[in-house]
Image (cartoon, rainbow, N blue to C red; front, side, top):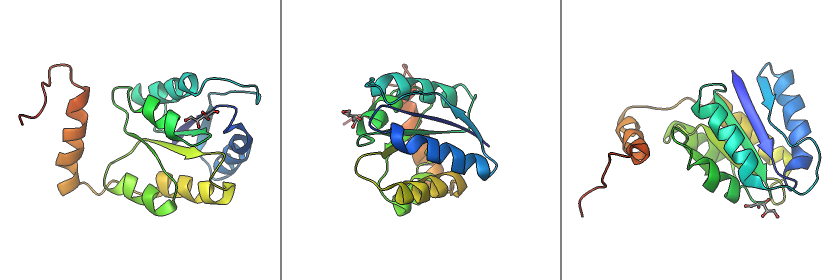
Length: 153
Ligand code: RB5
């Protein structure tokens, strides 16, 4: 499985260890930066990783910023991406099982590395359940369609 990863300065510290750990497990990791902890703008890296996933150049994406929130807001705006900010392994499991999430956004400042590692593990190993969730995910994705005019109130 190909996994794209990116961060900002606030998420940078945890990125190398995650890359090394994922590589040791056999994942093909594409590190889209940054390469130093110099102050930078999280939307630039969220955009890069989200587009890699949306364009099929990676199967999943991982983004790390201070909270994970800015990364999730940005990545989710890219068509084809289902991104969320995740703080527990259990939510990571449900994010895959129910929402077929393809970009996980985690906090480098408030979530310890060991927890983030477990979040990423759940994110990469849990299958989408399909079934009743499939139609709901289809309804999420219609929001990407410019021709969709919204659900009538
Ligand atoms: C950077 O200070 C911080 O705003 C960023 O890492 C992230 O938490 C934004 O959502």
